[in-house]
Amino acid sequence: MSLSEHEMAALIARDIEPGSFVNLGIGRPTLVADHLPAGAGIVLHTENGMLNMGPAATGDQADPDLINAGKVPVTELPGSAYFHHADSFAMMRGGHLDVCVLGAFQVSARGDLANWHTGEPDAIPAVGGAMDLAAGAKRVYVMMTLFTRDGVPKLVPECTYPLTGVGCVDRIYTDLATFVITDRGVVVRDTFGISFEELSVRLPVPLVDRPDQPAPRPVRGASQPAGDSPRRS
Amino acid sequence: MTAARICDSPAEAVAGIEDGSTILIGGFGLAGMPVRLIDALIDQGATDLTVVSNNAGNGDTGLAALLAKGRVRKMICSFPRQPDSWVFDGLYRAGKIELEVVPQGNLAERIRAAGAGIGAFYCPTGVGTPLAEGKETRDIDGRTYVLEYPIRGDVALIGAHRSDRMGNLVYRKTARNFGPVMATAGELVVAQVSEVVETGQLDPEVIVTPSIYVDRVVAV
Image: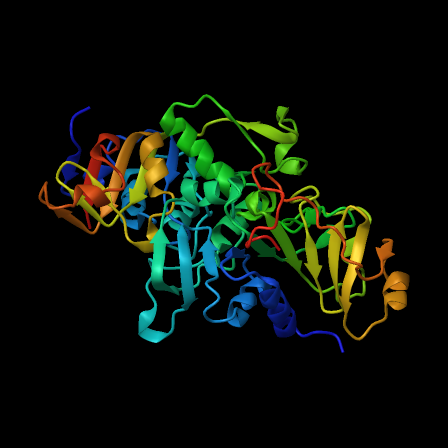
């Protein structure tokens, strides 16, 4: 069976290391928050200036001064911190965020991401923080359906939509499979209700059958030590 | 520069803003948006404005109301398109407003650079995308960066929580957002606050925007 969006979110949540600092993009990636294990010490960052963001506010809790990136009222947790926008984005670019999870229109086999603009003449472009996250987070995970409603693949040889970032995506979590972008190509890590062979037929990119431990690509930013650190995925 | 002037009204706080000005407007959506200053600016009448703000108006109040009056020639923002951005959407589709989309972090850092006296900076965001087209790039330690220039305002209108009588400001929760950086980058900086307290009543350890940046304050 293919995964529901909550099952995709749960899978991503399971793959996030305890103690990670994580940014969840607006829309579907926000669901990941519902599945993060309690007590794992995972700290959520929201681009509009907060760390250790709590769940959505309910009823009287809603405070117009306390919102997330999607402008939904949220809550504080013990240990929350506020900061201004330049600091918030310095955290991203400076390589301090371990993981971000973003939606996508398309991802290329090289890990190029397109998620901000359809490029259609009457579309109003709106990029928000997507390019900053794509360029800055140590790991960029995409959460999307593998095909559009019309059955068109969203994992493609080259993005045809305007790019958000070049070679920035590390993993793609979809309803039918999980992909890891490696120097050896696109590795299929998991499949859900579909065989590797059928995936290979339906997708226009070469696939590598599941890992004999594919070497993850080096973390962006040269300061990361070569050994395993607890926050690396 | 002398200490900030505590104004009696939003109208006094926005007096003298000229046609053709570039105005930095704080807020992320409506959180931190200085709605009363914008209302006063609408009454004041300045037009042909360039507005720099994260969004391009929500609903029918604040920045959306200024846009609806036809006072804004150009919007510089990161995220104009939202479920409640119907005012901007209509103007844009009718060709009545210019739009420059800037990645959100570049918007914040370009404003910060203006306030910090930085001539330009190399930034990795947007490399290889349409938003970096035509911009100078440079490879540094194996990574490509794009040259970004400061954005300064003739005026900054920001929302804060409290001010003292000198103009030291504190903010509240995520309503802080662009306020502190915009306060550094406007030639005239005007803050709307919920309360003005006596000087000495704000803990110096928690002041986010020191008074040196602030010209006018009004409590609403």
